[in-house]
Length: 126
Length: 257
Image 1 (cartoon, rainbow over the protein chains, first blue to last red):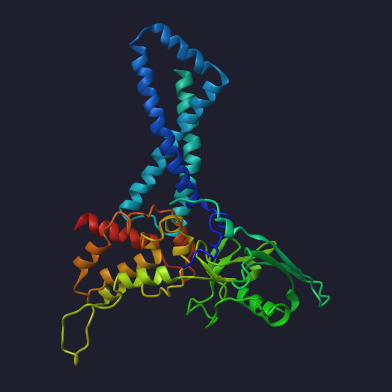
Image 2: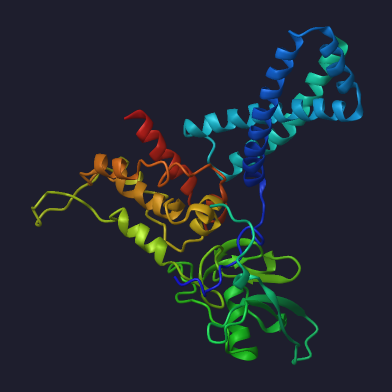
């Protein structure tokens, strides 16, 4: 149809629900994780160049921004893993009923927070 | 392509306000998307105060009341008013559905009514669905069978027939396709949930002889695999069907055969 006709509003007016929220978060955390894995690779390569580099990085992670980053990274990975498991079940053909997908969506959201707390708690006691 | 903001000529402006004239105490505000093709202006949101004491239960009744009693210029599609024809599909309270089956009592606060999302608007609540119909045509939605014996019934076992349950009920109202973000961004190439559910309906029919060709035709990065299980389709379907599951079934068939 001609461009003179307006496009009806879409994402501006459409309601969010659990599955669409988890879906967009899955994509965002996926992109974040790729960047993080790349950074970790650089970090490991940096360590080869001597322990002064290690100290710089360690100091960074002791700042508030660094600590926030660590929590964020752990959550991002937790979320991605749980959401990916949900996708695997979908690929097998299970869990498409509205009720089930809402429950699994909530499990992913709260499970990722729970997993973040457990992983960080565990690593603090080490 | 993902484009979050609306084009310039589609930006929605504030419209007129129709104050209640009946003096009723049970008033609800109804915000309706309006676009007049004749004057070259941008779309607007008109607000109507409606007397709810004398209004039947569904959103379509509300629209009819406005059209009959307040503003006859408003345009929308409707026909059966029993959830069978699929004409009155629109976006109500941020979710697609059929105006004739959606009770307005379910909506809290002001009632917002828009056309189906991401379509070219023809007038007011009427969107242009011709792309969707072309795509529907492309999957050849009819039985392909070489049997020439017209005097005999084409029998199906109870089990085979039951595979069509949850598929044949689709009325092609386009609520699901126009709720799908993937279809918003790639609607010209991605077939969308409604058409894919129909594609699956013919793929799984035991009487159809071209299952392989049908599968091959639909197995395409853009046509099929743009589905990312956002589940807006299943959430929107006014008939309670599950297009997301149908699409997953096609993917599974392709992966296992």
